[in-house]
Length: 407
Image (cartoon, rainbow, N blue to C red; front, side, top):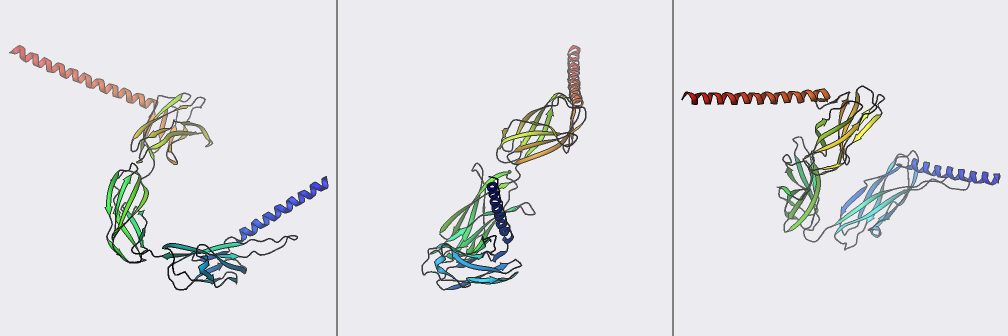
């Protein structure tokens, strides 16, 4: 039984060593073989064409390489340099012939030339081990459409140094004939599908199988932060093409505008009332506030969290949380307030003391004594104003009655 267990253990160990060796060989071969360019693009032609790319060996040893074809155009390609030895730290050209049929459907057609590095054989007992690495160079063939035909995209560039943006619509003519008149009208919509602006590009002409970029400046200074959708209507001669692009303006963030705390002392429950503004042009869903209080060693001593709440776009809301400081010893604690929704957050650091909160960067201190003093001063001011008004009213009546009595 012991002998059988030992044999099984040795087999298991040998299998583990074999797998580990294969993995190491594969890792060692990674990046040893490369090709450039990774893609060759050509327009359709009924003539036989020769295309080539470079195979690169970055290893310190010679490698055996074999090339093959796969993909839609496989039957129309013939590799000239099918098998070869690629010397260490060198590169060589790989050539293949393209002989396309007389008729091919309009549009994009592709093929892949696979360059395979053959494994290097070794032995462990009677088992040959090795690793093969394959890289691919693509061939794209564009067959023109009859008449006039265009393909386009839309993207937003910026902001530039002045804070402005530009819409860029690259257009490629895939038809047999030139395009005489080409222009685009771009409409920008909010997330509620409300149109906010319409801009137009320049008008140009475009030769067959050529590319041009239509550009329109976009002033977003009057728009609120938030998600938007741009729709470009591209008109070329008698045809129309529509493309869209979704983009964001501004930052997705919540900002603390004000905070109120009840009269508190360490050892009691503090109530935090936060006025939070949503700077984003969309609803901040499931937003919440959380406070982390740190101990002397830097670890989290306690944390308080408010319930989640949806805050309307470009609006303010009140978040309320309660913090129990029972059992805390006297002193000042480092703390952090975090406003969050989804993956975005806004953070503020502050000091939590005996009877005060000192927010760093906000420029104010909330304290038990300060709040009481502010309330007392306000009440005194109101009383003084009321007394003054009463005195003024009494004097006015006295003067008015005195005149009447004299008459």
